[in-house]
Every structure is written in structure tokens, then in C-alpha cells.
Length: 491
Image (cartoon, rainbow, N blue to C red; front, side):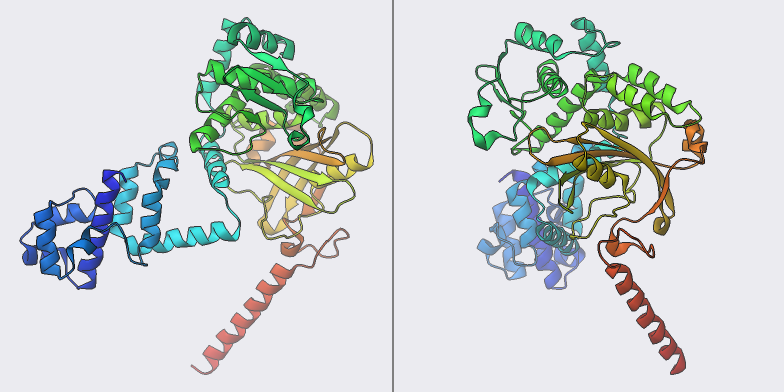
């Protein structure tokens, strides 16, 4: 174990023993002859006493020496000890959020019982929701994105630097052929396209990179946009000199948080390269300045880049907050199997705060009035390659309205599987000034909820389940009111 953690565990034990014996720091100082400030630093994990001082504390507190120096903690502090010994504090990306590890250790030392209760609660929640280590890392990256409004100027500048160094014209769609040439000529890649299809278990992988020979294995059936994104991510890993990285796309597992963060950086770079900021802003200006929403113009903007709809919508979450100061937005990705009534929300991002449409982990039914679900139903019934729709979603229960844009496409690697990508913008005075077409009274508007179980909309013809959560809350409120009346009556 690291020396700092050994100090902290000893300090926790000393403080626990002192507290159990109803001794103040002043009292322990008088009993032991050690200064109050020195004892305080021991308990905070900043100092570790020499053996003779430990022996003296052992005698004065009537606690065996071996028990005091043991790294084992009793059941009340065991969870904290487990976390310290597992070195999880080294894996948590504290620096991303401006937190010093020493500050966290001080918090643990100052209120071990309360911190223990908090940690136990988090662990219990994580177990209840099957929250894996990878999920924790991904949640940390999402929080990092949200804290920065999902815009990273240093990566934007690196893309411009790359385009200048390799004469990549960002005013035109960047082709996979251009990127492939750079990978081969500059970085010594070998690209093979007929290997992954030999292994049935790898059917969901788009690519595998073998670092020793710089061999990039590509899946059969990837389209031009997917190929370009894979190449752009590989270029990012080389140009940004990323060492600790993932070698499959999509990822199989993360070894550490650094890989998760680096994967995000590479993906951001790829998106910024394939959908350059200046060109996207020009395209969006044309859409936003119209008095009515021009769907054809929006689709034209999407098709102006060699990128998938998902990459385009992801890129909107980078550019809208920075270029238009539209920071109240959310991003959702749903998957759906044709003929099924199940819809899975497997990716989301919320900027500014947690917006109304969000992931639900309690097996409730997402509102069937969401445009995200409707485009999935539509594309699963027709043979279109892309289904687009938008609506103004009015969350009456939350007193919030969103402009919601959604695209659905077929999953090229799974039969009868579809996915929808959605961006929602909170409608307020600021957004109405930015988007002229919001003044169009003919735009489709819909009252929606989050899930059927939590929705107060009456006579909904697409409701999948009764409003059980609301009914339970109403019943509890009624009981609460009756109890209040009884208290007043017999007071």
C-alpha cells in the first residue's frame, strides 16, 4: 500500500479509539504527552508516529500494539479501508473536476462515520442498478463533458493544425481515401478488410487494431461514413500521441480511466475533423434564419459531411453551446427491434442540468409520444434508409418545452435492429431569438411525459401502463393530509 494510505488508516483507527473512549484531542494530548496539533495531523493521515510513540499511545489507550498498527479496520470503517486498499481513489478522475486527492482524504478523516455511510449508500445503489466499473468511468466522462459544455477548444485547434500539416481541405467533405493514405504513408498502417468476417463472435465489431504490426482490421459492410470515422479516430491516436488507448471499435472493456478519456478525445477529434466547426456553423445559420423549419435544408446540412447522423447530432452538442450559447440541451440514442414494443435508451448527455427526457432504470415504459420512438416505429415499418421528424415536446408536469429533432437509421450489423439519435433544445426566450422558425405556429406540438408510470396525461391512446408512481404519490399525500387533520383535531 502507498504510504499516504497507511497513514490515513492509522489516523482513522486512532480517531475511532479516542472517540470510543470519549476523549477529546486535548484529553488525549494530556494523557499521552503528545501535542494536540501533532495528534491532529496523525488523525488526518498527514503523519505516522514512530514505534515508540505508537507503543506509548497503545499503553495509554489500553489497546494492543498489534491492533493499532494493523491495516484491518472494524466493520464500521471497513468499507473505507476496502476503498483505500483497492486504490480506487487513484482511478477516480478527481483532477478532471478540480478535486485534490488530499482534500478528499481530509474529508474521510474528519467524518469517517458519515463518509462510510455515504460510501455504503453509493455501493448499494451501484449494486442495485448493476453499475459496473466501466459505467462509472463513462459517467465520469459524461460529467466532464457537461462541466465543459461539451466543447474542447484544444482539440478543435489540433484538428486545424492537422488539416494544415496534411493539406486536408476542411471546406469539402473529407473522404476515407484521403485519411487512409495518411494512415498508410505517414503512420505505416496495414489495412485488411476480409479478416473479421471469419469470426462469428466478432459480428458487432467495426474494427480491431493490432499495435505491434500497426494492422487495422475492418469489418465487412461498413459504409463510407463509418470507415472515415474509424480512420479519423486512428489518426487522432497518432497525431495526439495517445499511448494508453482502446484497440477495438466499439470498445469491449476498459482497463483504466485513462483509456476511457483518451477514447473520448479521439472520438471528439474525429467528429471535429469530419464535421468542421466553421462549415457546420454556416449550414446551421441557413436553417436557423428561416421563418419556418426547412426540413430539406436541415437534411442537406446533415448530408454536407461525410459522417453518420449520429456523428452529426453528436457534433451539434459541441457547436450549439459554443457558437450559439445554446447550453440547455440533451442528446439521446435509442435502439429498437422491429416488431417489439421495447425501446432501449443506451446513450445520453445533458448539458446545464438533467433535462426531462432521461434514462430510466426501473423497467418503466418510455412515453410513446416521444419523437425519438416514433421515428423508430416508422423506419421499422418502411424501407427508408433515414427517417427524420421533429416536434415541440411539452412536459407539462415539469413545466418545460423542448424543440426535439430526431433521426432514425437501420443498424447495418444487426437484422431488424434500428437506432434513433435525438437532440432536444430547451425552449426559452433566448432560443426563440436564435431560431426564427420557432415563431411558426404550425409546428407540430405534443404533450409528453417521461414514462407512462409517471405521466399525468389523461386519456392517452398510446399509454403502455397506468400512472402507478403518480397514483402512489397521490395516495401517500392523501394519508399525509388526513394525519395532519387528526393532529389538529386532537391537539
